[in-house]
Each structure stands twice: as structure tokens, then as C-alpha cells.
Image 1 (cartoon, helix red, strand yellow):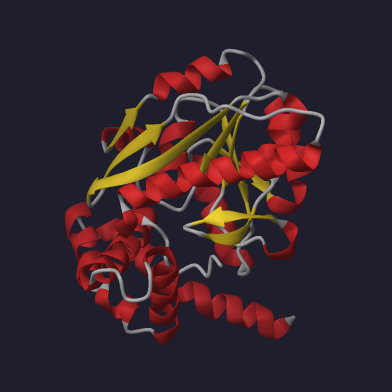
Image 2 (cartoon, helix red, strand yellow):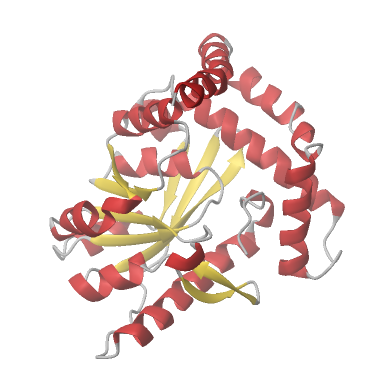
Length: 287
């Protein structure tokens, strides 16, 4: 336990240094620095292996431009630096740097009183998306707590500062379902490998273990489902897109409903990624 505690401290010290720098540096200069150092991410063997393996699955072996890989590292670095800068920003500043597309669909769905399920992926700056959306509607998100408890507390504290409620993944069926039934927005990240806990559906032409929660919750509660994603327009500038309400299959066959709906929701997220492939988190071992 002591070793783990010291490891957590060692990991979080540079984070605090970055947070301090973000508080002192002008926004443009801080984000510009993140963009400049982004090639370092591609020098890390594990990152390079994972990104290239994922791109090969999605587009065919070597059938993708080298410029895309460079843009992936740049956008991830910008997401990190924007998120760090978010610790020093107010709700008003977040709104000023964010625009919405079809936000009325969210309000219309919530007005039905059954809550709202949002399906999304790690596209653009998902932390900014949560902070900006929570300003307008009562929002919760399902998360997997970070392994470093101190870092997890830091990140969760900032999310809550913007009004975003946090539901640990192991409490989804209790806390998450409760908040949805209370009429809140509940967001699910659809693009993380769920291993044995997920349902295997096609993603970029290859089956991937995917979270069942949105399909299960939609079936249990009758809540509407909308998909959304964040698009980076420029460093520190974002556009959040929402679809209209998605059709949901509800029959007496639970397992088939879960498969069909999860497959459909995943195809929507895949479509978002295909629009702006450089802004997805290709460094995650999805398959």
C-alpha cells in the first residue's frame, strides 16, 4: 500500500506542475506549447504501436496517410493541455469558447420527463463537452475511476465544479439508473474496450467489446437516446454536435435488443470518428 501511495504521489507531481504553468501562462501560449511538443507522443513505442495497429484495423494495413498519425498526436496533446487549462477557467469562459449544434434536441428529449441517454466517444475534447453541456442541463456521466486515486480526485473535483455529476462504473445500475429516472441526462462513453463485460459488435469492420449500459437503460426506463460528439475548431475552440433522437429497438427479446441497439449506437459513434478521424483517441487499445 505504501509503495502504491508513493507511486501516486510521484505521478501527480508533474501534473501539479503543469497545472501551475497553466495558471500563469496565457491561454494561447499554453495551448501552443502543447501543440509544439505533441510529436513526443509519437516517440513513445507503446503509443506508436497502438495507434498504428488501430489505424490498420480501421483503414487497412498501411492504408492511411502519415499526416493522420501526426495529427492524432497533436490533437491528443491539445486535449490534455486544454483540459489542464480548464482547471483555471470559469463556466462563462467555457461557454464563450464553445458552440452547440442541435442543442434543442437535448432540451426537447428531457422535456418528456424520462431522462436522456447520451452516447458518445473520446472525440475532440470530451472533458470540455461535459463541462459545457452541464451548464445548460443537469448532467451525469458514467466513468471508470482512474488508477491513481489522487489524480482521480483532482479530475472529479474539476468536473463537479462545472456541475457535472460523476457516476463510477460499478455504481451505474444504482446511482446512474436513479438519476436517469429523476429526469437527468446520463452520458455513456461507447468506445472503450469492455473485455468480458461488454457485448461484441462491429466497430470499423471488426467486432469490439462495447458497453451495454445505454441499450439496457433505454430498455429499462424508456428514456430517449441521443448521440453527440465534440469537434475541435481550433486550439481552445469547440463545437458540440447532437443528433436528433435515435430509434431504439424494444421487443420481448432482451439480448437481441441489447445487441441491435448497441450495434446501432456504435455505428453512429463510428460515423462521428470518420468525419474527424484525427480527433479520436487512437491510443486506446480498442480491439
